[in-house]
Image (cartoon, rainbow, N blue to C red; front, side):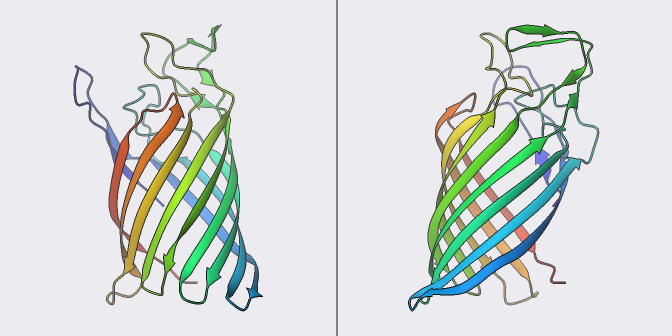
Length: 218
């Protein structure tokens, strides 16, 4: 996955950023698939992923930076119950380890401390998602609740910009619709909306995304 990100300030004098963000490579393995009851099937999936910055963008311009510019390694476990008629319930939890970030300056201040270094230790992240919805070979419509808990990091200081290693905790609700087109094969249209209902160092924002997803089968 290689996302292209563009940011823009609605007010003020700061300019936004744009460009390719991070490249992410992931591997998924079906650990278990069995008939749970006569009404549906239980599945267990494990996912491992690694990410790295694709371009030389700066992470030291939050909230207008296009990413954190941190190398990452993550693991995730998902339990899924699929009913015979297409309805499903999913539960997923994951942990992300993040590498250090290098700034274009020789010192910085965070967590009430002055660091005489250009390297910033990034806190790890734990997250989980609970979702329910409807799934057919062509249509995927889930509604989900997710929470992210940052394992460390400081708060945004008063009258200061956000910092790349700030803790970012949130609770969000999301609705998604994904439809696989009849042709070309394996291409789908994806539209989603997310709303942050609670958070720490995270804006209470509404996010709308749309895109095309192509699935390669090996």
